[in-house]
Image (cartoon, rainbow, N blue to C red; front, side, top):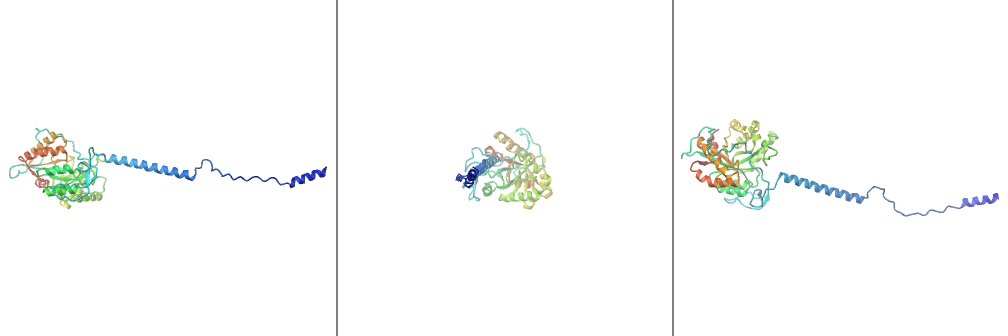
Amino acid sequence: MAGAKTSRKKSAAGKKPAAKKKTTRKKKPAKGKPSIFSRFFRNLITAVLFVVISLGVGAGYYFMKHPAVPGDTPGDTPGDTIDTRVVKGPGIEKPSVIKAAIPDFEVFPDEPVVKPKAKPQPSEPVLPPAPDGRPRVAIIIDDLGYDRKLAEKFLSIDAQLTYAILPYSPYRNEVANAVRLKGSEVMLHLPMEPYEYPEIDPGPGALLSSMTADERIAVLEKAIDSVPFISGVNNHMGSKMTSNSEHMNQVLSIMKKRGLYYIDSLTTHDSKSQSSARLFQVPFARRDVFLDHDPQPAVIRSRLNQLVRIAELNGQAIGIAHPYEATYEVLSEMLPGLQKKVQLISASEAVRLAGY
């Protein structure tokens, strides 16, 4: 019996176990780990969404800063710009059109509208009248360079007017050339920082109080160079800038260097422009009336009559107007009759006579 057990054990020990079948199943990716293709497409979608959102935010910011002008159509409305720089005749050439934003017009000081019967008091020494006995009046049309059609209308008025053009405005060269061909005078309408900045932006080429002295002078020099044929400068906005003596000393020092006169638009009663002009011996004058503080025809007529009365009291007066349709209509209507009462002169002649 013992021998039988031993033989069975040997046979069992000598017998090899059956080999396991090999399987060729693919390994499954680890749970939760995306494939390389999933990761690629996910990153691609994220990048596209980021670009779309960035473009949307950028477009929103641009249109917030550059609001569309109602009724703005290429070729004949505010905001049209042109890509030529030469006028070949008395009018303004009309080449191909691109778009430009229109800056805000003047920020006016708080001044009551003077009623027609109110009698202004003389503020300066009375000047002798013109040889024919008429007092003298200079009228400056500000904010030109953005509206081609209105510029042409103001240039068509048969009267001695002075035209102040904004730096970097799209029509600046064309308007300046047309003014020169007419035999009238060109001024630079220089943007300066108002108290309301940055809510109200004076536009390209503006002098800001945050600039260093070197930056401010560099910006001023470039603005002067941007408008051809200028003989003088007046400020666009600038209530904050003109109330700072140090800043105005810098500005008037460049006026002296360039041989330009300066007319203070007087957008603040705290202006230090006159003392700076005296310090640097720059020919200087101040405006007396904003003609279209309120661009209603009745108000413009009243302010124009006020300008004449100031001229009758002081010997001369300076008025500033803006390129509004109503202003053009009133000046066209009233200037022929007013020229029987006053002599219209250029801004440079008014500065010469002011003799500050």
